[in-house]
Amino acid sequence: MSESESWQLRVVHSTGYHYNSPATQSYNEARLTPRSDRRQNVLATRIETTPATRAYRYTDYWGTEVTSFDLHAPHTEFTVLATSVVETAGAAEPIREASWRDLRSERVVDEHTEYLQPTKYTPHDRELAKVARKLRKDRDPADTVFAVCGWVREQLTYRPGSTGVHSTATDAWRAREGVCQDYAHVTLVMLRAIGIPARYVSGYLHTRPSAELGETVEGESHAWVDVWTGGWWAHDPTNAIPVGPRHVWVATGRDYADVPPLKGIFTGGKGSHLDVSVQLTRMA
Picture (cartoon, rainbow, N blue to C red):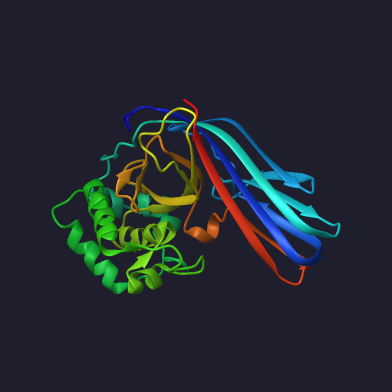
């Protein structure tokens, strides 16, 4: 089964909150709905909650579909179930239309300035910027993206639990370890330092390239980067592979803070714990 062919994937993402005593109110925002674009087509999607709530949907500043809901009755458990069926395209091809001179132009810098600036999770790092400048030498922008992603994968060790959702790119770089969120953040720091507009992408990855039809794998949320070199295209620095048929994208932003799958607040409850499961099934 080739990475060049299209897939049809079903994604089931369940998040369960369990409160130590009844929560009296809960307010939540979910960024769990894939969007259609030139490389993926969303066939069906729904978000359900238990207990049931009234949902409000809107598109945020970054183009992500957000489902917000609130609950005003005492509850000790709260579950959000997001189910989607998506057709995905073959591996993303790099776009090579922009030169380094183009990337420095006033028009490009102005249009993509939000994806060129440091953020809380992707602060300027002098050491990473120095490495990025070395990798840029004698390469065009697209090949530099490949070089940076490959370098990040070589330098970091994938270790779940070594970082948290609040860890910055600098934290991961100093530890030389992290998860997909950290690989994406370190890559963003380096690309932005040399003037390549780059954004954070959240979504899912089916982990079995040779998956049979109907085969389900246990997964988790995944992250990679979109880069602009005359047009947007995507690459996965955690695995150093093109974004292809096994990837389902949900949201884009400057960093993780713009795209958390679920965030909210509750009153009462006296503490809680969280259960998350993601299942991906190849359907076609």
